[in-house]
Length: 341
Image 1 (cartoon, rainbow, N blue to C red):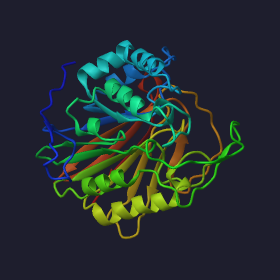
Image 2 (cartoon, rainbow, N blue to C red; image 1 turned 90 degrees about the vertical axis):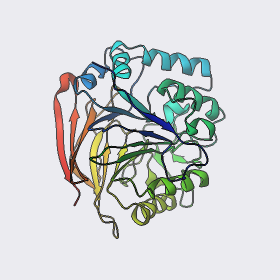
Image 3 (cartoon, rainbow, N blue to C red; image 1 turned 135 degrees about the vertical axis):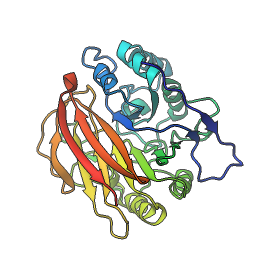
Image 4 (cartoon, rainbow, N blue to C red; image 1 turned 120 degrees about the horizontal axis):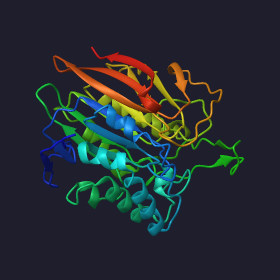
């Protein structure tokens, strides 16, 4: 497969703040995404299946490895093992790859701002992803990034949120057991003020026709007992209000983490479009069927290893989305269509 060539523009600090960290003069049609890939499970990887869908862009949504360490030598070795898989190597040679972390690749399960090796871990993540040394994200605290893909059919911006580096402490009932349950932190924050200010400027970009917001943890679902934006209700409300009041174009959320996949839909009062969240997890980490409610879920959740492909079809500068989930041997597990008008 011929490697896609991109025209890159790295924006200086004097550029308008609402512009993306990186701008590509390239149309993207097929965006593949996923999360939760254990580097030691060599035989269980889905990279051959991902390559078969011929994506224009691959987005990592966290737990890109299971690092769980403060030792950056160990972290690098795990990233190197993940990167050495022949079919993943083929992917990065033929497709643009971007991504964000969640907790295990951050370095500690359920971790937040208290993690002592977060700056060193960020460098390992960015090196694994191939983030250019001139990318402004390299120079600031946190791993959040943004990418614009410009084309005459429509401009798409991908915003990747860091829900670890600045996140306040999260407490648990029954910690250390499978029965553990998160305790709501009513006034806690997830993004930190610098990232909030940056996000507001990203979302206010008037040149964008379609926004994609990536988050390692789920945003819309409320009922499960694991990590989610709903554990920090003040931060979640702030995010939804920012989307509603700042964004003038359709937006979808991509998330991972859960070792299940599902589509959630929220009718956000005052927002011109329905708000969808596409969760894809996991690529090869263990999945187990479990009874779990989500009042915002559309259709059934998926409990086998999978990834997703979102195809953008532009109709008069308005995006229509075709979403498909794939499993082993490219078996189609689910499909959805979303129109914004």
